[in-house]
Length: 382
Ligand code: NDP
Ligand code: MG
Image 1 (cartoon, protein in one colour):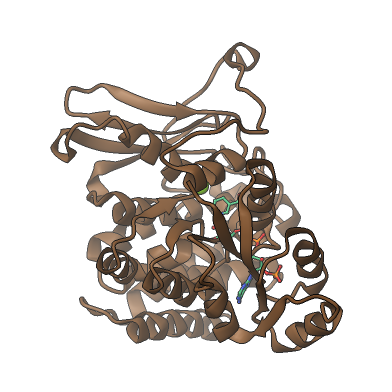
Image 2 (image 1 turned 90 degrees about the horizontal axis):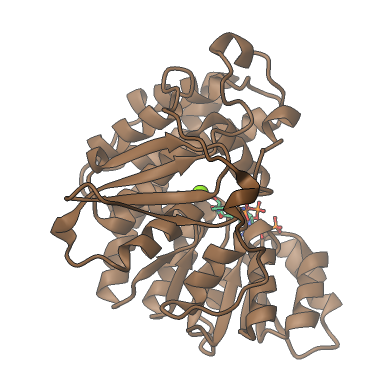
């Protein structure tokens, strides 16, 4: 059970919910970080009294230093400041809720400082999976999933006798706001429509990833690394209600699921209290209230990102980093009105075909592949 936590990305959707969990569970806060939101970070710092805070944006950090000058909280700046917070001595655990590749180095910093790691930042596990898992192993740390599907699988696996008895993992997908739509109908969907997720309130990037279903592709790769399974051992099923958070199948065809109302505070809390469980502020699940739960095959032809990610992890090496980097850029361009919804998958596919990969990679290889994929996407849009 976590006693003192550092939260990276504390001003975001995961970060603010993690602070809510800390408050209710009595978990102390050692350090908080964000990118540029100095107003909210100041409020959080005054309420939770961390020893250190950091903003990656240097200007915003300078403003925060002024705002907090009447306190003894140390204000750090830049990427090194975020890493210093990830290594804050008084914390036993780090929750990484940063969005995107910016979370990779902080994750490695936390692991090297032998902190327990509750990981929401899926992009970096997708891009640098072998690097992250190797660093975790070398430092004797197990990476605890925060993503609801992976938390569900992790919870189901608690009853496993031996790995050989696990046959497959079944990831559930809400299907996002555009489930059931044809490619023709998707040609003209707007950013506002893509941001209207039926079940979850999340940051803009992951909400758009849910609409393109890239999120499920990223989660497939995330599961390969977290649970050491082959891509072919992972199935995906659309489950509109987001109540069954994921399932595992054993060799005897027995299937175990984890259920709950869609509220991230359950998986966040479990990653922080594991292996214990404590009461939670989240609403109890009433199955009778739902009445029925539905399950369907994904439409892989329309939502092409899932298969692009499957292909990327099957090919291995830096292909997942290329898929992720291209998607981060394409997702941003879509949110800024620069490309259409269907362009996102096209750009990810084109980047996978053009940017070169290699089998064994270092941190600088991952960062280079990420940069090359982003530049590829940008040059194809201009
Ligand atoms: P948000 O956009 O809501 O929050 C992102 C956080 O990261 C903010 O605190 C932001 O700071 C900070 N940040 C952004 N860019 C940088 C940077 N360059 N350097 C340092 N910090 C940065 O995202 P979410 O909370 O929705 O998602 C966070 C992660 O969790 C993602 O990887 C997502 O896929 C994953 N996840 C999220 C779920 C959810 O329910 N939201 C569910 C499952 C997984 P600032 O506010 O200053 O910009
Ligand atoms: Mg998820």
